[in-house]
Length: 288
Image: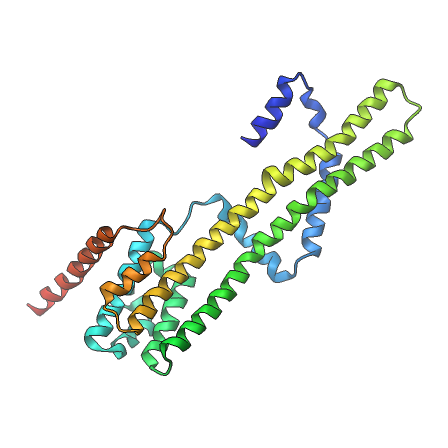
C-alpha cells in the first residue's frame, strides 16, 4: 500500500519511474544503516533482533483459543492443589511433558516462556516458603526483565529507522557533490545528476517512515502480547495464593486480557465445564 500510494502518485503526475532505480543510493543508505545497527548493538541484542524478525510476518500466537487453554490449564492445576493439597502438583511441575494435565495442552507445552513461568511459580507455591507479597514482588521483577529484553529488538530496529533519513541526506549530499564536480556538462545532464542525488533523500525517508519504523512498532505490539500472558498468569496465581477458588482465580486472569482476545465470562465458564467433564470421564471409567 505504501509503495502503491507513493510510486503510483508519482506516476500519475507524469514522473519517470526509472529515476528511482539508483543502486548506489540504496547501497549508501542500506549499508550505512546496517553498519550503524551492528555498531550500536551488542551480540545479545543482534541475536535477539534477528530471532524476532520472522515474528513480524506471523500472526499473533496469543489468540482467544490459546488464552482459554491457558486459563483451563491453570484451573485444572489449582483445582488439583485445592482438592489434594499443593504437594500433589509436585510430579506435574517436575516433569510437565509426562503430566496428565500438561499433556492435554501441547501448544502451551511448546511455549518455553509460559511453561517456565507457570512451573517456576507453582514450585515456589508448593515449597510454601514465600508469602503472596514476596511472590508478587518476584513476579513483577521477572516481568520487568522480560519487558526489557523484549524491547531490545524493537528498539534496535527503531534506531535504524530514525537514522535512515539522515543517511538519505548523506547519499543526496554525495550525489550533489558529484553533480557539482561535473558542472562543465550540459544542463540536461547536470539536472539528471541532481535529480538522482535527490532520490537519496526520498529513499531514506520512505524506507524509514514507510517500512522500518512501522515494523518496530509491530514488534512492540507483539512483545506487549507476550507480557500480557505473564500478567494473566500472575493474576491467577496471586488470586489462588490469597485463597480464591480456582473458578474465581481464572476470572482474575481473564480480566487482565486485551479486549480483542478476552473470552467472555460465559465462554470461559463453558470451556472450564467441558474441561472438567473431560477430566472426570476418564476418572470415572478407571474407577468402574
